[in-house]
Image (cartoon, rainbow, N blue to C red; front, side):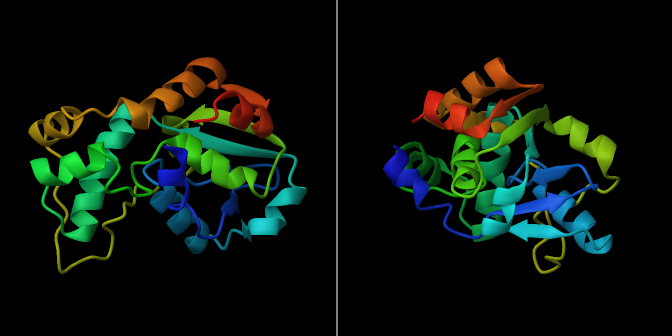
Amino acid sequence: MLKKLTGILTSHCEVVRLTTKQYVYPIFKNGRSSLTIYAEKNNLKTLKNNEISALKKITIFLRSPEDRFASGVHTFCYLTGRPLNRATLEKIENFGLVNRHFVPQYLWLFHLHKYFDGAVDLRPVDELYHLIPNRDGPWTGNAAKPWTAMTPEEKQQILSIQHQRYVDVDEKIIGKYMNRSVALKKIIQEFRI
């Protein structure tokens, strides 16, 4: 599975300096749009790739894996114009379609690990909203196609596919390390998928 998914995270790795002592690694569907827009509006520094290696600790906000998966698939369909139907969901189920919005959060940690091997502070995504006031989404600025929130029926349809391979590793990481600081290298080695 890892081989099918790792090619999805080939872009720059970015960390936002939220305060002089707090650096945050933004993950798609975990407040990334809000954090990025907040950083731009407030002229906060964004470190990229090798600039990240000098940091001592990075905060990472994680989201409930099932909620993130469903929301990520919904956003992926919206952004790409794909119908949210059985054919699309079967391709996702079989890894025929993968996207950064719904791959395991572990892969985001794996991507960060290319540039950073220090401590990470894993926090629930709800805590991000105590730090920044805005609630922006990936749909911001797309006036040609109005955003529609995911309905309970759409969420149920998405979660009806076999999605455990997308969420299992994240559930284990959250269960063991949420609200703790741990060496990123330890997480990568312990939960290798």
